Amino acid sequence: MDAMLPRKPLFPAILAVTLLLVLLASVFRLIENRTQAFSAASVLISGIALAGVAISLTLQGQQTKAARDERDRSTHRQMIYLTMGDRALAECLEPPNSPMPFERYRQIIFANLIMGRWYAAYQLGDVDDSTLRYTLERHFRGEIGRLHWEYGGHDWLRGAIGGNRRRAAAFAKIVEKSYEAAVNAGPAMPAADYFTNGEADLDPQNP
Image (tube, rainbow, N blue to C red; front, side, top):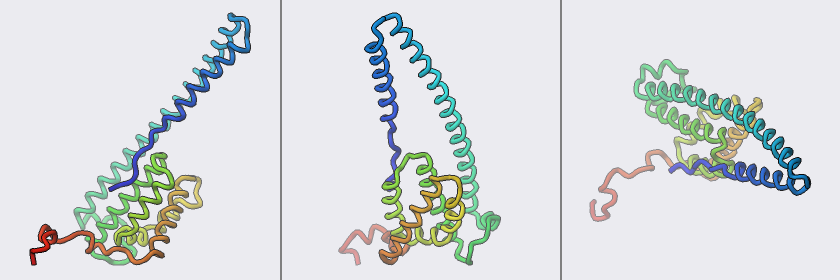
């Protein structure tokens, strides 16, 4: 199961309302003349409203960019799904660093999609560092997860670390350290050992 769940950022909104109430209360407490106090409060509220409009426009711009990025990622996922089911289409992609069975290549590509989802969630702030580390600790217990990072980790690191995207670099560093910790902890679980062969394995009386 995926441990990553979006967080509900209610604290900033509660804090903003609290600060507004404190400011309005301060205006009426410091200005004895009620007419002047209402005028000052009106100016304060107007300023806050303008700031709210500016923030709203900024957020709309961010949402538009996020929607565009998601559309691009959706198109990319559809193309990858097509190549995973058709070896001839997969040959249109870049060749693997070393020859491998097509089935293993499909597994690595799918693992890359999983990593891409975690990357997007981390970029959006839906998960924090500790949640990401916990998820990666479980992910790198398995053979395919480690093979994927061995195969394509250098591309993630080269594209993120040293660039201008701070969270991208942070994500790549966390993944790399989690991978190194998993390798140091011992061998990965082979993919062939993930699952049993069927219901017969659940029956101790079945030879």
